Length: 176
Image (cartoon, rainbow, N blue to C red; front, side, top):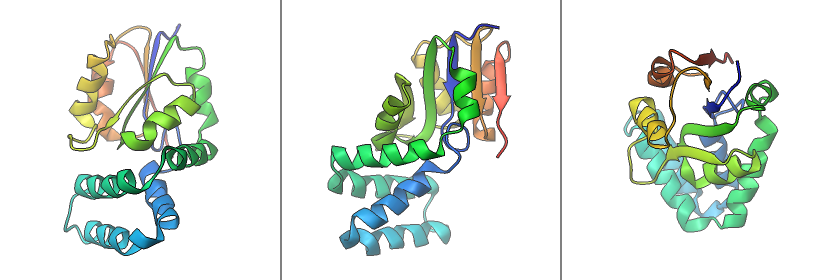
């Protein structure tokens, strides 16, 4: 079947890592003066005092205030070392490629460009996390028509709404 549109998840799918965890490590190394604050946020999350989304919002706020575009580009480049070649092969012939992720937009834009994926939907600062039905609605707003000729690739049950919407197309669940 010819693939017209490929909707690709990021973490655990296109990259064999959790990009946000890598981003936190990058921030920790890059901004020594903010290490105590970063550690505090990580501990609050580990102790379940704050949600994953709250931790993400706080970490991204630090990044936005401290990182340059060159820093973001450097981080995005580092993610290319985690790319899953099998996924890239699956989407190589797709007419349209969309990176659809809950990862923060702050670095997704640069990474998508490096991967020659012209469209993306990601978690925007100050908005709901781009996962589950929120991600599905984001993809629909991009004009994706699910069904024959559409491929959804993911590793996570959070993307169940995407796969249900694409029940007439091709769904690939990637194992880690």
